[in-house]
Image (cartoon, rainbow, N blue to C red; front, side):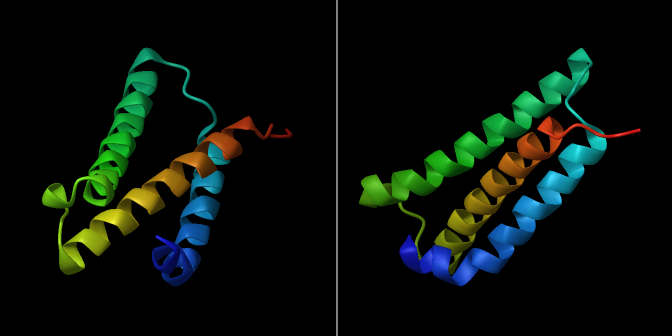
Length: 95
């Protein structure tokens, strides 16, 4: 995991900054549909993270090779994007 973070840190930083910009621009979800969509994306992030962690805990469920690396990278970048969205939505906009 340390190797993954050391190789993918520029992408993780970019995902965090893009998420912060998106969260600041869009603001927090206000309608029911937007909240359900945000919950679905958060659930997707949890599922991707669980799939990546299952490969670490249960070796029989591991996705081998390049595909496993892509899965773990995508899970980390989605998590960084969502954290950026939440942080960006918390920053108030000035009129």
